[in-house]
Image (cartoon, rainbow, N blue to C red; front, side, top):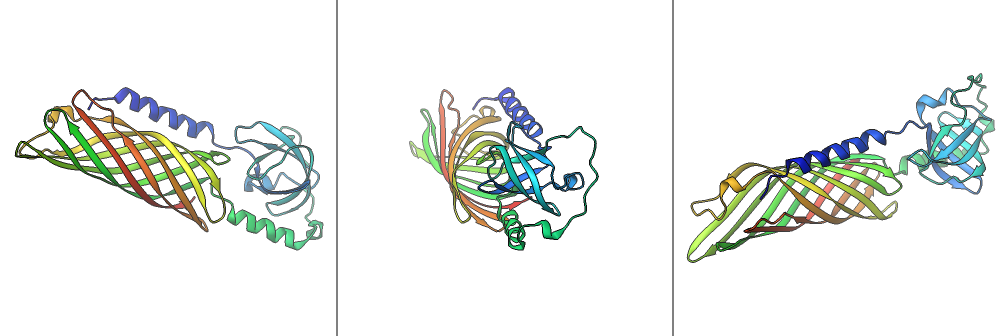
Length: 299
């Protein structure tokens, strides 16, 4: 196993940079569109500077403008608008059109301006059921592991892990995911009448790109691919060492996977499978195929 510190540092810097770049500064988000009618939930900081008659841009998460919506009615941070130009779609973001202009005096709210009380309630329901942009939780993993050490032994066993997981949505159905925790690799085998074992406890930091192939209120299917940084914390090679201890060092592991997400209000159960690709050396090949089960909470 080779030390790959420079690759690990680059991947870490890349994902941290993404998280800083994508922090949203828009006024709110579109939660539903019915014809030309647009339901919007405003950010609380924008409520005081938005009133009936104002125009809002609809934008992608990268900030690209897609359309213009005029505020027709407003109650608290809930807005019903009319699409005047361009496009509006669920999960788009909104931005005040005249951000640098003179602040308009706020008009008194008239509850009767809302077209129907049921539309307000409908907007509130949509807000509660919308998928969280950020989720945090725990995931447990169990994998079947194999390790081949040339001219020594073929070994098999398991990779058992427990990790904290953070999921952040960048665009519709597309996001990044990070996991931090421990993985315990344990494999054994025999050859020539001798028993061999490899037990390594790793501190792990995984980074993924995540994409939902489909996502509904009761079921979702996602794919993920990325890189794990595996740093050995302790090793036990037994009385007959199949590996040289100085060959065990920090390494980068490729991870490909798929999963099923089951939303439960503000929570989500995730289960699926991952394939771990350990970089082979001249005399050692390791691979793991495993299952995962996690519980995430919207934050």
